[in-house]
Amino acid sequence: LDCVLAAFRDITERRRMEEELRVMNLRLREWVVELERRTADISLLGQMADLLQSCLTSKEAYEVVAHSSRLIFPEASGALYLRAPSTRLMEAVAAWGPHGSAMSSDGFADRAFEAEHCWALRLGKTHSMGFGEPSLFCQHVLRPTPDSLLCVPLMTKGESLGVYHMCLERQQSREIGPRRGVLELAQAVAEHIALALGNLQLRETLRQQSTRDPLTGLFNRRHMEESLARELLRAQRSGRPLGVILFDL
Image (cartoon, helix red, strand yellow):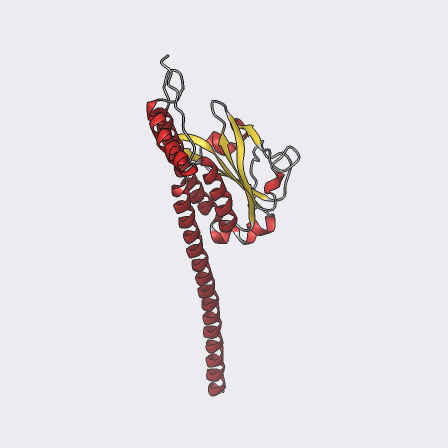
């Protein structure tokens, strides 16, 4: 009887150890998959940052944002809203994903809205809607939706440039969102976008100040010299004459 009990205990202990090993193996696989996903996300994030820093115009930056967002969040739709000059109005300058074209008056989000209609802009921090938790929906979300929504403000030097808005289907937000750390990843994306757009705006401001007269807004002598060199080369290539008219006002 003692031998039977000892054998039974050995079998029980062996099964317990095998179960623990199986659970540990499953957890290790999950960690490996998660690590691979995070590595891929970091790589895509770095690529987006490099592209944004190489943009010469805001339009190029908008295209990079849409392209990179499709790669980083393939399961999501979204839009980039920026503040219109001298107003409190936020306008969509880029959209992506299967619901990206729904940024209209009859879709789930409008193409333009007042800054006060977004909780993220009013609070100055990320505002999530859904994700299995009760939450307040922003007013620029025009219709009730079962999906999970996310608004991340684009902050630079203490000011808001706009908002990074994203929509995930409910099933996807449950399965993919928490595992991939979608909130943290979206915040990192928004930080890169805000930094790049802030630099582009500063660069454009400096360019305007260096080539235009501050009183009249007309192009100055520096712009004439830059343009004249370009037009001279163009005239040489085409074999056509170039005329210059000077006015003393």
